[in-house]
Length: 372
Image (cartoon, rainbow, N blue to C red):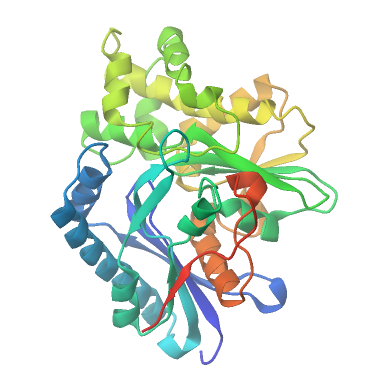
C-alpha cells in the first residue's frame, strides 16, 4: 500500500487493559477500517498508571517516567499495526492518540482539568509520523467538560436521517450519544461501565476482568446495596456531565459495601445490575421516543451485563440493543476510530467537540500537532 492517506487511532481507556490501534481512511466521508490491533499493557506499567490515577497519590517522578514509557508503548503499538498492514510513515497522515487519562476533574467549585499521559513526542520520534494529541484541554478552556468526545464521531458515522438513535459506549466509564434525525447530537457520561466490575474482580479473583460476566452471573444481586450505590451524587447532576476514577473507585466501593454481609460474587452481581440500570435510566430519563439503541466498547463482551442491560431497558419500554457491528463498525474499535477521526478533524482545521455534549461555550478545533 502506498500513499493511501491513512490515519491511525490510538485508544487506552479507563480499564487500562490494552492499547487499541486502528488504521483508517476517510475517502468521500466514508470510514474504511484498514486494520486493527490490540497491544497488551504490561502489568508493571498498568500498576504505575493505576497508582497515578488514585486521588491524592501525587508523584512527579513516577508521572514523568510513566509518561515516557507509555509513549514508547503507544509507538510500538502503532508500528506493530503498520507492519501488519505493510504501511510506512509516508502512508500515514497522522496518528491520533487519546493518551491515558490519569486525572479528570470537571469544572465546578474547583477549576476543571483533564490530564492524559503517553508522550506524543516519543510516538512521533519512534514512528516518524505526525501525532495529534491533547484533545480534551481546548474544550475545557472554553468551559467544557472535555468529555465525552466520541459523540461527535458517532454523529458523523451513525446518524440516520429518519430515526432517533442512542449509541451506548461501555468502557471503564459509560456514556451515551443521542442522535436525532435533524442532525442534533447530545450526550453525557452515565456513570460506571467496567471500572468497578474490573476492580472488584481483580481484588477477589486476581483477574483483570470478569470474562463474559460469568463470575457475576453466579451471584445474587442485593436491592439494598443497589439502592445505596445509586445514591452517589453523580446521578443527581444534570448534563453536560462527565466522570471517572475520581468518583468511582475501589476505595469508594469498599466504603459502600463494608456493612453488607454479602459474598464477593453477590456484590459483583449487584455491580453488574448497577451499571445496567444506571445506563438504562439515563436513556429513559430522556423522555423522548427512541427508535434504535446500539452498543460499543469493551462492555459489550460482558454477556451478563448486556443481558441485564436489555432487561433494564425492557422494563422501561425501551428498544432492545444491538452491536454497532450492525452499522458496519465492530464495537471494540469504535473509540480508536474516533480518535483517528479527531486527528483528521485537526488536520482539516475543523471542530471536534459538540458544545451540547461537553458544555463548552463554542465549537473548537481540538488537539495539538507533534511533528516527527
